Amino acid sequence: MASGYGLHGGPSRCFPFWQEVLACYAVNANPDDPSRKGLTKCQLPLEDYYECLYHRKEAKRVSELQAAYRKKILEDPRVDAPTEKQIRRLGMLEAPDEEKNIKRPKWLPHGIKDQGIA
Image 1 (cartoon, rainbow, N blue to C red):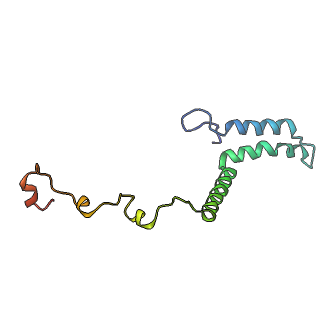
Image 2 (cartoon, rainbow, N blue to C red):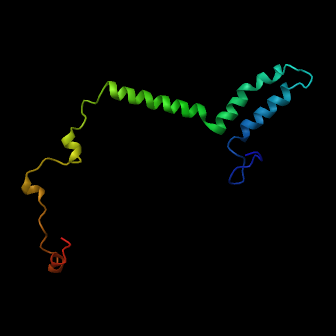
Image 3 (cartoon, one colour):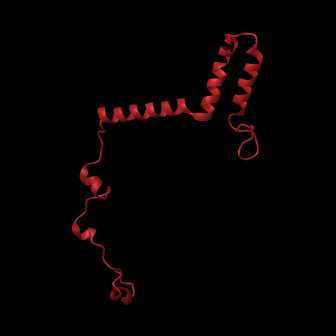
């Protein structure tokens, strides 16, 4: 990253943000100013650069959205939620036992039955 080159030879994803930070420092930095007030103007570009590198704000926002979604699910359960019986049966339709039993097709060779495969 420090070189400014990405994995595939082009500029890295955060290099434009780094250029903004350097440009801000070049314009606002004054070596004679001991309070360094000029560098406080560069906090926003620096913050953008750090966000590009570490995605902390994005991760925080995603976790907040997930927490809100989970809270909403707990507060207001679905009306059409499947029952435990439907979940156990994987959503298969109710059918009489005769329809559930799979009958052996007549075209299978007899050797398969003897081998214990079916």
